[in-house]
View: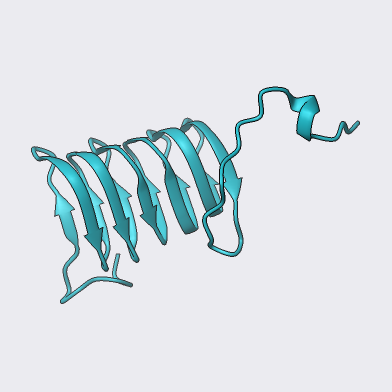
Length: 132
């Protein structure tokens, strides 16, 4: 987490800490506690093994060992460790998944790094072409 460190440090929510609200940051951020709300950063978000986010995440890169329940927008690379649990809508540039990770999400890859709109399809025949 050295790319976007500010003054040699990165921000952190310790495992005994619970935060409610919106976090805005220019640097990297590590969450080992609970965040109920959103986080937006130009840097990397790391969710530790005991970390949990209930809300939206917007960042350049993410490395997840814990849980995220909410929308996730990662403009570059999302790495899911074997202990990770993701639920929600996900837009990413690249995806790395270890065996054992749980991804219960609508997932979209977006090379341009721009947020896509999500559309729920109730019937696959309505908008998708059938293939062999």
